[in-house]
Image (tube, rainbow, N blue to C red; front, top):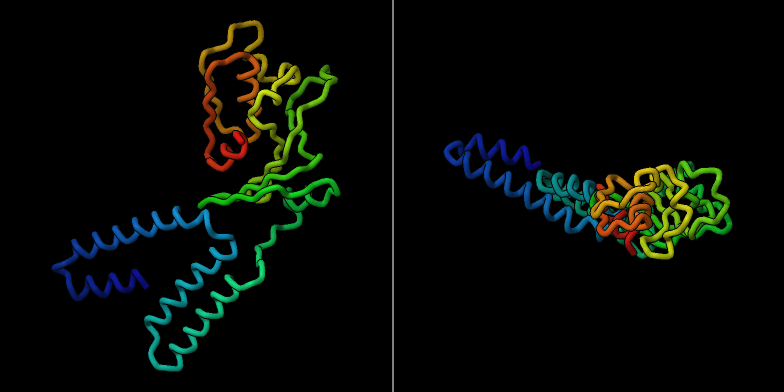
Length: 226
């Protein structure tokens, strides 16, 4: 609808093409800004309704005749009621994703779900969250308590919060400990693309003064630092 309207305006008012293109770009920029501001506050089922409502609104603007307009208006109302009604409608994950599979364990429970404009993360309490990749078999102790973390219902990862009680001897048996073995720790460490945050704990265990963690997902950083 927006493209059709712009083409019609350009055809009839070519002398104002600069203003029309500027208005089109400003509208797109404003729409993108609104999306990132509103997206974290909406559920998946509500965002599913947004393109449907936009399509119905476009049809309503182009419809001719009272009956057709009434039909489209009724469809808009029904769509809003279906998505925002009193029931708690949710989009179901595939039962073969990590989150539904982990929740089948009798001791697993979902703790929290967060959204932003591009990602959904779920934190859960589960005995399946035991994450220490590459740990030496010589370690016979216990890992600190870990919680589960999934991204969009998949990629189950165990993580220990970034606190002193998560440090310990077990970190000395991970492959990355070789970076700090028998040498003075660096003053600053940059950790790239982490999900569990174990590399940050390793740096703190070694005595690094400052650790900066870079991740593509701000929600993951918030979950790990709490």
